[in-house]
Length: 116
Figure (cartoon, rainbow, N blue to C red):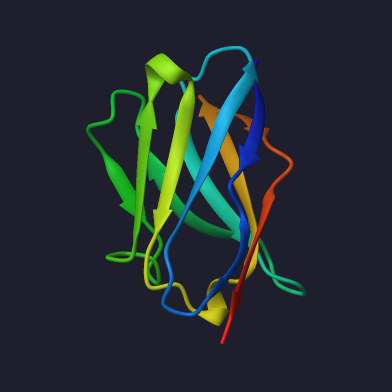
């Protein structure tokens, strides 16, 4: 079991970049596939990106590919999301997710707001 804490969100202007982080305050993420999801007001939670346990596979949601990059550092027990060319449509609460054979753990989320 892991406890996840996201950080690094904030208010940025359109076109800016932001790197958000997720660290495990308890447990280790080494054996988990790690993912980012986001949820905008009034919308369903949306898949953003996922990275495999051994870092050799990544996959992105359609609107994020080419702008967002997911990475992880198992030694630091952390996963990151580098977001470039942010647009107002990227405004949402971003959630970190750990998945081990269908056992899911979530962080509390970090707010990202992009102004036009």
